[in-house]
Amino acid sequence: MRINVLTIFPGYFDDPLSLSIPGRAREAGLVEYRLVDLRDHTHDRHRTTDDGPFGGKAGMVMKPEPFFEALRVLSDPGHVVSLTPRGRPLEHATAVRLALEDEITLLCGRYKGIDERVTEEWVDEEVSIGDYVLSGGEPAALVLIDAVVRLLPGALGDHESASSDSFYDGRLAPPAYTRPAEHEGRGVPDVLRSGDHAAIERWRQRRADEATHARRPDLLDLDAAD
Ligand code: 9D3
Image (tube, rainbow, N blue to C red; front, side, top):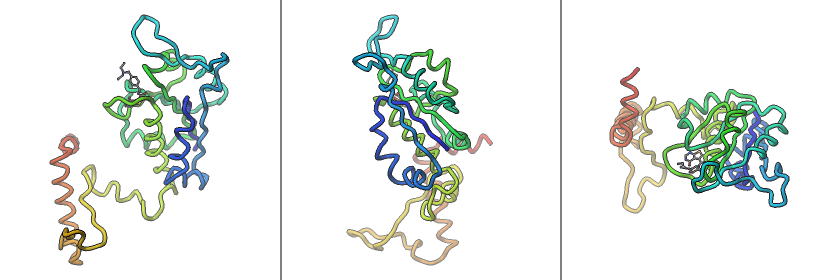
């Protein structure tokens, strides 16, 4: 898979895409990242990528020309996703769908957003990562890339196997413990050290239900719908 990212801050992606699962997936040849600096697609002395909005109002809008030129230079950008607070909320299903593409191109806006003509001409879908205000699309693009790349076959090692991600079936995972068995006066629940695998599984399921009821009752409501 190839993932292109159009941004005025290509350096923002250096470490996140070199480390951990996204980095290992690249080294394994499962994914190629192409960072495109929008300033390389400007033609004025100041390498201008934004301008004031038509119709008054404060803030700046990303100019269309650098996006158009960068997207044309890619020749075929594949499935184009714009990261914007106006987008559909990112879900696991979004990541699953995007992981099936050969090539995706992510557009990162700043300030008030990207000129709407870019969206009309190039964008297949607009995605948000949630209802809070970021400084730009870059952190959202990294979140999306991480969620997609870990789904590529071979991306996860034995210790990260995705099989346990779905084990609690739309509910939150139970608490986890590792050694030491006692740490600064706090122990590990006896059942986890009992060797009774059926009892351990009952404990885990119950703690998963409790956490989901307390923190994410919306997840249980979804269950009721189907
Ligand atoms: C005009 C009102 N603001 C929208 C809430 C303007 C605005 C604020 C922040 C426009 C862009 C941004 C920068 N944010 C993103 O580009 C962004 C984002 C976000 O802020 N939250 C959640 N997901 C995303 S994806 C891209």
